Length: 115
Image (cartoon, rainbow, N blue to C red; front, side, top):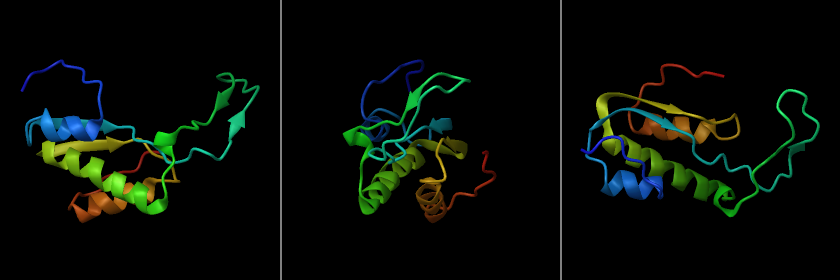
């Protein structure tokens, strides 16, 4: 496998076509949270400036669509992750359930949840 390459494409596509099976030691994933459309914003934040929630089509899915998407990307990660590898997933309490369910279905041991 080639190293130090940045792919600018859909992660599921890349994981399924460009990365060798069982070749990755560590995956850090920051998938969509599926929170768009809620209109959350915080103006005047004193610690980091204004922030606004993402409101994009790629972050708007029905519950079944989001679960299917989660199965797809975690399944693609599972294919390339070494048997003794680790996966860290950035998520929120809004979407942690789907990730944990899919990981458990694939036989992963959840060692910790960092909040």
